[in-house]
Structures are given as C-alpha cells and as structure tokens.
Amino acid sequence: MIPGKGSLKSHHKSKSIKGVSALKAGVIYGANASGKSNLIKAIDFGKMTVLKGTKPEQPISTNFYKLDKKFLKKPSYVEYEIQHKGKNYAYGFILNSKEIIDEWLFEIGKSGETKIFDRKNTTTYDLDFLYKKNKLNEEKQFLEFTAKGTPRNQLFLTQIRNTNVSDNVSNITDILNVIDWFQNALTVIYPGTKNISKKFELHKDTNLQQVFNEMLDYFDTGIDGIEFKEVDFEKMDIPSEVKEDIKNDLFSQKSEKTSAFLSNPQDDKYYVISKIDETTVQAKLLKTKHKVIGGEFELFDLKDESDGTRRIMDLIPLIIDFFSGGNVFIVDEIERSLHPNLVKDLFEFILDKCDDINSQLIVSSHEATLLTQKLLRKDEIWFAVKNKDGATQLHSLEDYNVRFDKEIMKDYLLGRFKGIPKLGSKNQLTFLPIKDH
Image 1: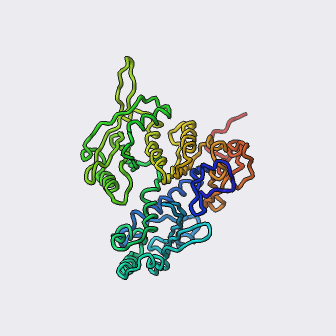
Image 2: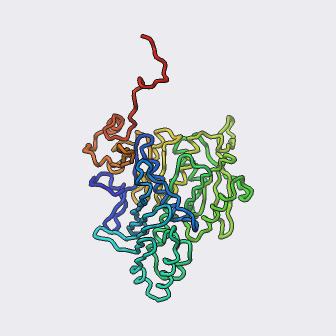
C-alpha cells in the first residue's frame, strides 16, 4: 500500500513520515479461489501469533502450501511494514510448526533503516540498540533474561507483551508501538464471523445514538432511529468466554478501546458494551425504530431487519474508528449482503472525508462498481491471480498503461487485468441431457 507515481487524489495518501507515505484504501479483486481470502487470513495469522502466542510445548498453528511437497518442510516468512505513532517499522518472523526461527524489528526511513532487535536461529538475539536505550545494568540484564526466557515456539514480541518488561526497563518504546499496532490499530473482519465482537474507540463527547441514527439515515435503511435498552451484562445469553474476552480487552491497560459492538447469533440481537470505570461494564440492547401508521413508533430487534441493514450495523463501528485515525481495517468480501451502490457510497463517504485522517481500509471484493478511477487511484486497485502451480500472485492496476479517463470495469470483466474466473465449456458437462435437433 505504498503510493505509486500518480499525483491524482493526493488526499488518499497519508502524511509523509520520514519520507514514506501510505495509501488510505485498497481493493483486491480476483476470481473465487484466487487467494484473496488467504491473503487476509495471513495478515490475521500474524496478528494472532503476536497477541495470542502459543502455549508451551504446543505446535504453532500454521498452514502450508500443499501443492508443492517441498513446501511442507519449508518455513513460512511473514513481514509487516507499518506506519504507527509517527514512525515506520518493518517487523517480521520466520517460523515452522515447531519454533520461531528468525524474528526482527527495524525502524525504516527513506534513506535507511535502524535495527531495533534481531533474533536468529531461534535463540540468538542482537539487542544492542535496546541496550543503548537502557543503560542501567539491571535493565540490560532484564532484557537479556526476557530474551533467554522466550520459548522456542513464542515470539519475542509476545513474551514482552505477556510480561512486565516495560515496568523494569526505561525505553522499549519501538517494541511497544508495534505491539500497540497489532492490538489497537489492526482489525480483520470476515463475512461470516459468528459472535462478532468489534471493539472501538468512543470519545467521551460522542453521542452514539446520534451517530447510528445519522449513518442509518445516510445509507437509506428506512429506519427512523434507534434506542438503547440497558440489560444485565452477566445475564446476557452469550458464551462466557466471549464475555471474558470483551471485559479483558476493555479493562486492559494496553487497550485503547472503550466500547464493544456485539452481534450475538444466540439470540439474534445486537449490543453495545461500554466501560463505565475500571471494574464495571454496561450493556445496552440496540433496537431500531420504525414509524407506524398514525405517527407512533414500533421497536424492532435486529433479527427483524434485512441482512443488508445488519451488515451496515456491523460496519458503523468501523466507520467510527476510521475517523478516529491511526487504524487499519481489512475486510473480506465487503459487498456481502450490501447493494452495489452502498459499497460504492461507503468508499466515497470515507475517501471524501479522509483528508486529515491517517487510517486505512483494505478490502477484498467482487464488486465491479468500485473499479473506476473516479473513485480510486490505480495503485489502490489490486488483482489476485493464480499461476499455473496454483499459487497466488498480486499485481496492481498501476502495472498497466491505462489512461485516467479510461473506464476499466469493462476491461476487467473481459479479462484484460486477469483475476476473473475461466469457465469451461457447458458442452463438456456429461450429466446434462442431450437434446435432439
């Protein structure tokens, strides 16, 4: 998501940090089974590996490329280049199902890079940069002790997150910045997620009811407003582990989230759970209002609304967080249950208002109405294509010589940019009846 040479739509680029800008949007196209979702799963895999870690003596949960047997024994390489807290970082790791082989963190700029730490051959660490930032002997010893105590199947970042390293050393800001990006900035949303629980930031002066009313009116849902009904959080019919996850995240000192939006398939209802103080959460059931004949209002549960309206409800916390700034959203199949015009309106709405907002929305989609240079830059449009070996490769519209005024939807559907299904011949289907002519 680094900008190409194009100068149009400059407000789609983040403010340069040490000579590096990032794009605020990206749309990935491709045929079914082209690998779009695998890309998103890989991004999520790295996040979960950092935040959840691996239990002692347990294998690392990995999936390997199965169409080439030699890859079953090859390690996987994952790297993120991110922009966060006013700095640019490259963080990555190499692993197999048994251990972390390599791990590294660099601060990067236009003219070079600075090594924050490096881990090689599972147990060999280069912490010289951190030693210079933390000059007391006991600080250096604590860092060394933490590194040596990191299990072979655990990331150094995860070990730091799970221990009280920041209480015992004076400066590991760069590591904490990267952990914060995974915990508070990166959100991955799948189309069929159950027990959807999205934590989002809510400023004290935000009127959540007004935000929902305005957004539902903007997207023409036919809803005349919403109301919140307070309920007992502990008596809500949701799994106990989901409740614990919400409370742990809202109460975590490392979390910036103040509220959670919960879509509960158990009772088909939507809730907003907010942190009241350091030990108390408040749950409110969301109901929609519809005007009935005679001017009164009837309250509906979300189960009575259309799939499209419920999908919009899922996206409202995303919109709130996008305009809070500093957040990255990865959404798989964003068009699921949404009218094509709504998908396009969502992008127009976000990109039209993003001048001073450094957030990012990256989606996979089949929705061809987004394929217009009036909406997106060429470097914001990507295609996922399988090669002859079944492996996915990504390429951008920027790779093609396409004029700005050229409408590209038709060319895409005709296959010029690849990324569309190659259908076989109907005449080769043996189960179909043969017609006599």
